[in-house]
Length: 396
Image 1: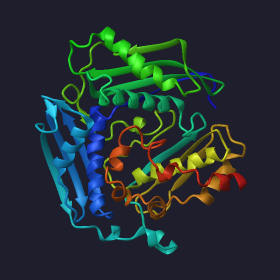
Image 2 (image 1 turned 180 degrees about the horizontal axis):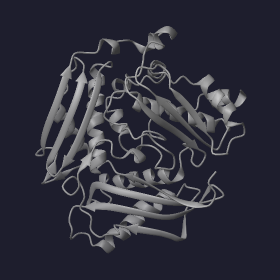
Image 3 (image 1 turned 60 degrees about the vertical axis):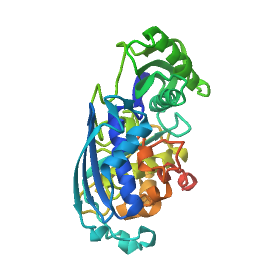
């Protein structure tokens, strides 16, 4: 277990070019799955000044207007600059459509045990799930605070509190730990983009951000800033931001999507792929297992690592690490995890209903996941965030 240290995590607003790409890619996934839950989809996106490029490969009979989906996301995020907006930006697409895959055409809700045992994964990956007792959502405090601050930064722009802001923003929060527990907020850096390089002044911007973004998020937090906390607002000066000033790419913010580097995460992107991809849903089920271990009081930190190989049904490797914080031996906890969680692809599809969630959320399901993290969310009812097995684990 780590003792005395300082740790920082980053979050970004939905207008960050990388996150814009993630949202476009996942909006495309949503739209395909609403029409055909058995669709196989891969969607990659990149943005730059005045241009969006989408490469999509899909096996389905469903039809999706890729530029239309991209423009809806750009408008929703709030880009209305002359050189980048939903109406005039150029959108290039490279769609590759194939007939529906027969092996994907099944109803997971009626799968028998034998049928689940015949559904292999079609990619190879090692994924990680993590949980700890630092926050109510069982997430590390640095990424929890960073997401909270990024949300607030986006909200004050959208609500017109600070109308001079643009959608692009970045946040980094540092937390000092003593004896392995969060002790104080060490530092925070907020980089906010603005419409004009002249208005407001940097002094006014910094004052506004501290007053309406930084300070309010700690009202209901146990760990707060103190007199030694260092706060940096646009430390390099005026930041205009957005695709007009730096490019974006799907899948480039994996730490923001998961645990803010406090725990390991897969190198594979989570956004832009259908939920039959084990490199996406495997990360969700690993989080589910780790969160239930911590919720059960078996450990204050838990990491579950799953390694999948192409063509196999079960993970080739399952590891549990409690970082010397567990009440039982790791061998005992591993056995409990093996007994009470099913990491096979067919079982994940059946339990989490992941192929049908977009049709239950017309406003977008995977698109919403693409900003502020795929795990630890308290604003969405995510099946992998449930702690419904905690009592069972605690009593075993």
